[in-house]
Image (cartoon, rainbow, N blue to C red; front, side):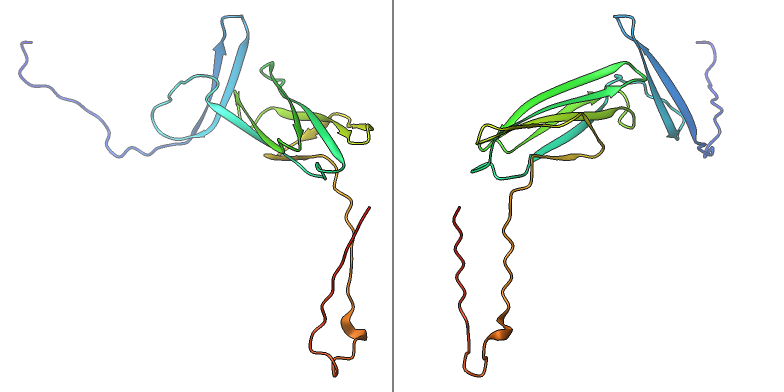
Length: 174
């Protein structure tokens, strides 16, 4: 209050050096969550909610849901063992619902593993259950490939000096 001048000393254009950080969150239920932050730059570290990252799993079906597959039940889980964090998801896909997305919060988007298993029920009443499988990616294709009929046409046996065009019609029935 008595001084009429004020002086601030600060280094201008100081080089920004990279650093790493680790934040430990203490939850109300006693659990600890650790979030590693590698490759940071700057002079400030902002601390936010431990669940700022999200993961997306896009689930798509394959196979003939019209004639062969009745429905496919998916049971998936995300496990982050380091933080003791787990998310689960279950969904039944069928002719009317051929795809779904599962979005869930995570502590660290680089940590954790997704595993899944499927139960496929066919129109004839038979079932096929998969073992638990690990998945790494964003689009999960479930179901079995449809039976395809492969047809090749060889037009080299036709006398093209007499023909200008050939029309080929193919019909298939079960």
